[in-house]
Length: 378
Ligand code: ARG
Image (cartoon, rainbow, N blue to C red; front, side, top):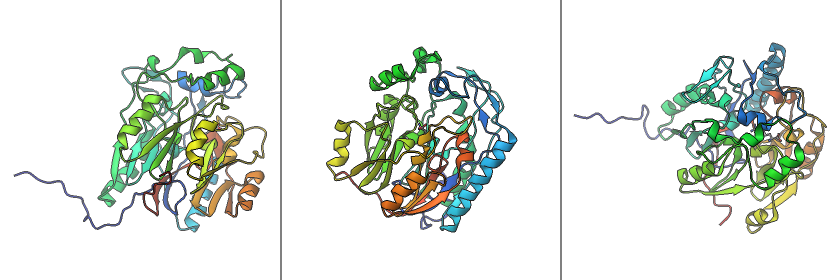
C-alpha cells in the first residue's frame, strides 16, 4: 500500500501566500533584519557594482554593532507602521554571515546579510521562488527564509515553494573586463547601452529584485544581476505569464529594477529620469494607456556611508494599496509628488537601514496581497 502525502490541513484553509502585483492591498509581508550584516569581500560581480569613488572600495568585514542597531530600530518601526495598517509582518532568521562560504567551484570569505528580502524571494501568485542570485556572497541567503517557507508550507495547502537552479557562479559567469577599478562612468554607460554586463550568459542568473509584477506581466531588468538566460528561465517557469525584458541605458550600475522603474497603481509608473526607459520599450505601456512619469529628484546628493545603492532609493517605495505609499521620511520631493497624485503618504524614517541593502521596497517581500491575476496589457 502506498501512502498519499496529505496536506497537513484541509484544502479548504484560506491561502496564506498570494500576490500578483505591486499595488493590491497588502495583508502580509516579510521585512528584513540587519543583524550580522557584512560589508562583503571583493568578488567579480560585486566589484563591478561598487562605484569607483565609493567609500566601500577595498573595505570588507562586519558592519558596526551601532549601525546594525540603528538599522534594526528603523526596520522594527517600519514593521510596526505596517502592522498598524493591518499588515501581518514576518521576519527572516539570520545565519552567520561572517563565516567563509564555499562550493566545489569557489570560496568567498563571508556572506552579506538578510536585509533586502526583495532580492531573494519572488512571490508570484501562490508561489514563492528562491532566485538563483548572482553574487557569491548571497548564494546562501535563501537559508534565512527557510523557517518561514516551512511554516507557510504547513499552513497553506496551496502554497508552492520553489527554488531556481543554483548557478555554479564560477569565473566563467563573470566578464573579467569589469574587474578593473578604473573603468569610469563614461565607459560603463557605453557598456550598459551595448548590454555588455558583468554577468555572462554561461548559465541562468537572476535576482528577484529585477522582476516587477504587473498581474499577467512580469517586467524584468536585464543588467548586472540578471542575464538573458535568467530571463528565459523565468519565461519558461511562468508559462501563464508574459515575461518582458527591459533596459535602462542611463544606469552605469544596473542592478535591481526598483530604484529605476516603480509601478504605483494600474496605469501609473514612475521612472528614474536619469535612467529613462527607451521609447521603443515605452510603447508596450503606452499602447495600453499606462502613463510613465519622471520620478521626483532625490532630496539627498549622496547615499549614506557604506551604502551600495544610489540616491535614487528615494523612489524605492512600498505600496500598501493603490492609494497608500510608504516613502522614506526625508524624501520631501518624492512625498510631494505622491501627494499631488492624490496618494496618502506614510513617511518612514529609513536612511540608517540603506547600507544594509536598500530602502522600503528592497526591505520587504510580499506574502499576501488581495486581488486576483489581472491582464493589464491585453
Ligand atoms: N540599483 C539601485 C540604485 O542604486 C538600487 C536598487 C536596490 N534595490 C534592491 N532591491 N536591493 O539605484
